Amino acid sequence: MTILNPDQQAIRQAAKEFVAKHIIPRAAEFDKTGEFHPYLLEAAKESKIFAMAVPKEYGGLGYDSVTQALVLEEWGYGCAGMGTTLAASILSMDSVLVAGNDEQKRRYFAPMINAELGAFGLTEPGAGSDAGSGKSTAVRDGDEYVINGTKCWITNGAVSKVYVIYAMTEPTKGLRGYSAFIVERDRPGFSIGTIDHKLGIRSSNTCELLLKDVRVPASNLLGKEGEGFKIAMMTLDLARPAIAALSVGLAQRALDECVKHMQKRFPGKPQAGQTLQFKIADMQIQVEAARETLHHAMLMRDSGQPFSTESAISKTFCSDVAMAVTSQAVTLMGSHGYTSEIGKYMRDSKIMQIYEGTNQIQRLVISRAVLTQAMKAGE
Ligand SMILES: Cc1cc2nc3c(=O)[nH]c(=O)nc-3n(C[C@H](O)[C@H](O)[C@H](O)COP(=O)(O)OP(=O)(O)OC[C@H]3O[C@@H](n4cnc5c(N)ncnc54)[C@H](O)[C@@H]3O)c2cc1C
Image (cartoon, rainbow, N blue to C red; front, side, top):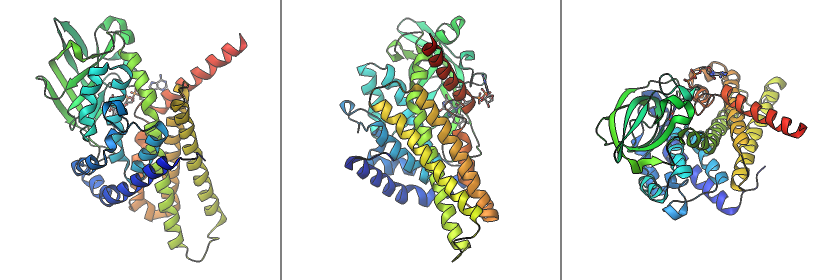
């Protein structure tokens, strides 16, 4: 088990208290209505938790990666929908972190410190796993770029003030033609399309973004023209463990609720079937293993080692564990599981295997790394 230092323990405790006070009591209600949860941003403003990924030199809290994972796990424990709001804002900040200049970082991070939201716009109707098929374009016109296109399934899309948008500056070059831009919500030509109705994480906001001749100053380009895909991949390396952390929280919550239920359902019968006990043991093993896998990736990141493969492993393993454990919890709780809030955890888990690159794509990434390493070792 990762040994936490006193600061990390205190931050985790504060996150637990925040979640117990502000998230758990209202999660079911927001899941039911599918409405976004602005009240939570007000509550989060005081704790400055949205600033945890902002480096201290830009006025943020500058938490190390393990600490950020601890906080995100607690948010996932409380409500993965609300946790997704926080994770997606960090995802957009990560693009600025990896490619922004000093001025862009100051400009982008300032609102986040006050719990305003950001969004990351890569996916398009015809370009999900195959990001190279993107059709959005950005054409240079003097000191500006003119952006056109449609982005879909964008988390925080309708509730953000600022976005990182990926568009082709040289469409004939495929992945090497992508560039990344900061786009402010109030630019003429920028609008919100359909808001999505979802199976899970229902209180998070997901929608289309429509860009019609949106002009941004050339100073909004992140990095250089043609570096967009590289920036997107570096961003996702940093951000995937956030999905792993939400997943661990989800799995832990399902396990805790399941154990509580079984104590009530089978009072005084600890042997209520060895099969049931073994299943609980297996769930505990999976949750612990997932948490350790995540912390291992985070320790690698914090020590400055390459952690791209570990990032993909943590996202894949932890989200598969969340899906398996939440589903098992429903099974063990029988009809009570199927008709109670436990079902929410199972619904919320499914997206963890899909967004920020599906687990199938992660397996391609992981196997490529393993095979390349094996080839190098054999040379
Ligand atoms: C709730 C929600 C929030 C989201 N938030 C964001 C966001 O904030 N920003 C953003 O940019 N995007 C976001 N997305 C989009 C998400 O990241 C993509 O939907 C995801 O990457 C998969 O793309 P796709 O849906 O087009 O699936 P497809 O690419 O159409 O894939 C369909 C299936 O085929 C499989 N597949 C595809 N290609 C291969 C291959 N080469 N080998 C093996 N299997 C393959 C996939 O694994 C999947 O199972 C969000 C999506 C949802 C639903």
